[in-house]
Length: 463
Image (tube, rainbow, N blue to C red; front, side, top):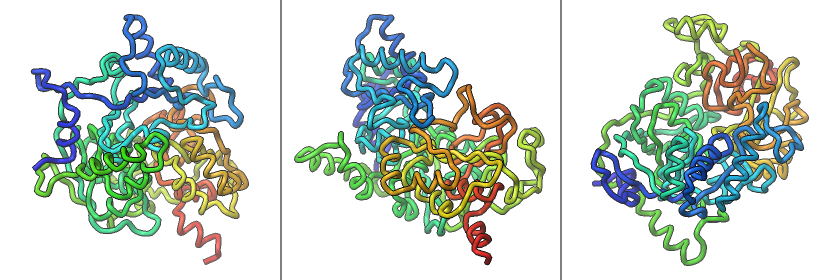
């Protein structure tokens, strides 16, 4: 009996390195301007060619400006244009496809790669970014690497890796109304700790996962690295097949039939044994919000901060043990990132914003995860909903997910964010980040405080 990971690993395993590591064939290497130029420059200095440029894609996403009407070389960090210019030059010299700042397919690598069909079921996909595990939602074996590992893949098409231990997380039942994959991820991490996955490769399964749309699965797998997972996987089913069929770089014609026949084999055999297992009831999950400086420091929206909470963390966040977050004044709200910057996320937030306005004193920002998402949102009029409510509507990129210098939220500002990390200073010096789903972020922006979407709507309707 073999697991999905076993099958993917064996399909790509070239040989045993003799020290517990294997040599793995890599189908796709994704680069970005923040670290991709480092690998390309080192390779060039050694006089080594890129073995197969057609398998590599470079995205401009991490430090590009999100200012409306941004310039082609414009960065959001002081001096950041150097990274853009050098990565563009080196990737061009190597013959690598560049998804540039002004390219119609531009976007955050983990959002755009599935949209384009660069990431497909059964592929191995590597990128020097920790949230590459997002792509496991399609049944791809994907994880984040370092620049030196990216250099090795560029030169050889392979990667030396040690097969991880395996964990199955079975989620039974159904998520309640308004409860999202983001809430499920935060609930899991809060219950089992930020180190709970023990560097295992996670396979998510169960009725709640089967019912989850692909965009929700991408969010769930994205957050697996915050659970200390090596990577995350979901067996590709008909939903995943439907998602990838029409993608520009997906197989077509007779090749599609062959691909789908292969994809149908990508599932763990009945009776497969995992090193660790976790069982969750989706019905227990409610809207979540983080209170501390780790995703594990999360509570149900409306609950109180634990009395055992770390004092240093509380001091940084300006909070007290036993305090409730609902009603706590905020100065910022951000919707976007590779976690929650897809069309369904923007639609979820927009439902909270129609006919309402952002509270005075709150800077609210929405940055679509890709140009495709932005165009589809604008075709549906969502940009008008955000703008009329008082949100800034930005150009695609990682934007305010992480601080890269330059202008950001004011020091000490309290921000509700749809992103994946709430570390100290993650969104700027002294900024206090509360993670939640896009609906909570939007409802909080309107209320001027951390707010529950359903309760906010009832209050405005006078109920």
